[in-house]
Amino acid sequence: MARTTTVIDPNDPAYAGQESYTPGLLRIYDTVVVHLSNRYVWRCSSQRLVQLYEDNVGRHHVDAGPGTGYFLDVPDLPQLERLTLVDANPNVLEHTAKRVDRYSPERVEANVFAPIEHPGGADSVGCNYLLHCLPGSFEDKGEAIANLARLLRPGGVLFGSTILAEGHSAIGRRLMTIYNKKGIFGNEHDTLGALERMLSTHLIDVEIEVVGAVAIFRGRRPS
Image (tube, rainbow, N blue to C red; front, side, top):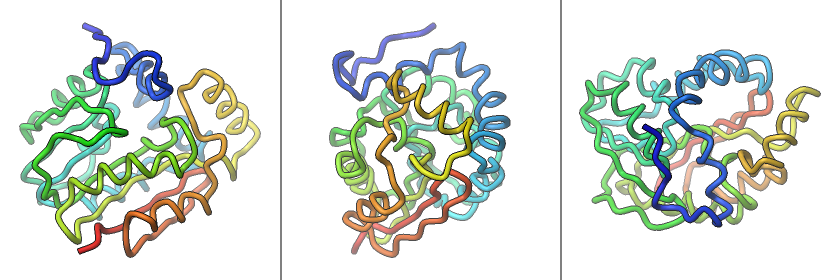
C-alpha cells in the first residue's frame, strides 16, 4: 500500500523528486525507464549501468535511491555480503527489499540532504539516477554527496550516474523540460563541469564518463 513519506516535508523542494514513486509506477518503471528511456531517450544503455555496479559494489554496499532494485538484482555481485537501502520513499524501500531479499537488506528511510543514521564503514555507496531527481544546483546537491560519503570507510568508493542538462536529443530535451516543470527532475542547470567540481570537493580520484546525456561517475572518500 502507498504511504506518504515522513522524512521530507511536502513543502520541501526535494519532495516532488521522490513522490511519484508509487507502487503502480514501480511496477512499470523497468519497462519505461530501464529498457526504453535509457536506450532511446537518454541514450545510455542500462547494460553500461549494470557494468558500473559489477565494477564498483563492495562487500558492504549502501545504495541510495535504488529505484526498483534492478541494478542490484541483475548484476553479478558475488562479493556482496551486506546491503543497506537508503531512500526517502517507503514504497521504493519495500519494492527493492523484496526484489533483493537474498541479500537480507537493511532499510533506512532518510533524506539524503540530512545526515543519515547508519554506522558507516561501507566499502561502496551507489547513487544511480539520484542526483537529477534532487532540487537545486550541483553546489546544493554536494550536501547529499557529503552525507553519502560519510557512510564510507576511508578509501571507499562512491559511484553513480545522473542525467545532465546537456547532450540531449530533441525528445530528451522535451522530456527533461516537462520533468523539471513537474519537479520530478531538478537538473536544468546540471552541467558536466559543475558535476566535476562538486564531486572533486568531496571525493578524490574522481572519474566521469559521459554516455549520451548521462554522466557516469566514481570517486573515493579521502583517508
